[in-house]
Length: 90
Image 1 (cartoon, one colour):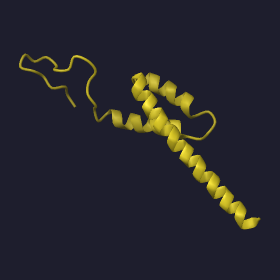
Image 2 (image 1 turned 30 degrees about the vertical axis):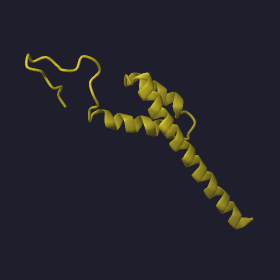
Image 3 (image 1 turned 60 degrees about the vertical axis):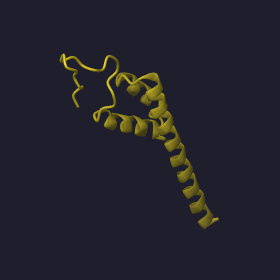
Image 4 (image 1 turned 135 degrees about the horizontal axis):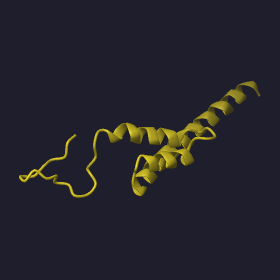
């Protein structure tokens, strides 16, 4: 999406560009990367990827916290399933 121009042909936005559609896949990827409950991925990898994607400190933190909460719920669901399976045998 191109930046709107004023009458003189200059960009209207002086600072950071507003939200663009190109950011959505990267944001979702960052959330999913921080949600992975596997050793070697998670918050450390997400923070490195966030740095290389040039996300702001606040935006990167919000995306990683969202992914972290999703990862917590994944682990809770897996644990409940394991306990239900163990309950069938014991």
